[in-house]
Image (cartoon, rainbow, N blue to C red):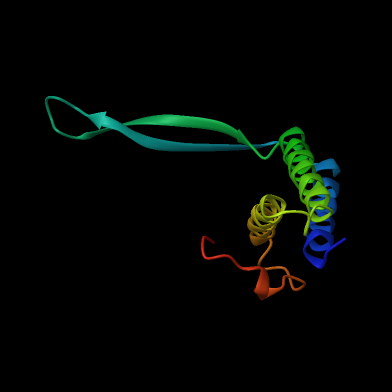
Length: 118
């Protein structure tokens, strides 16, 4: 298992523990501009309500990222078989680096994992 994969798996484990903690759902209330009043020209605001970061959603995200890491791990075993396999490994490495970028403020994050995108 690569250092990159080990790092991401550890962060996902932390995320799963957080999701399984005893906490109540967060409801965010905000107003967004939905248009302009035709008579006065004043902005028309509408309330927006959303439930964010429920434990179920967090666990689905952890599960999805673990599935991506599984593909990355399997790809590493194909490295060196052919140019096409090496290209696939390279793409999966890039994908894993993007996943790791979410945790770039963690003290164990390795700056060499940075991509130009994030």
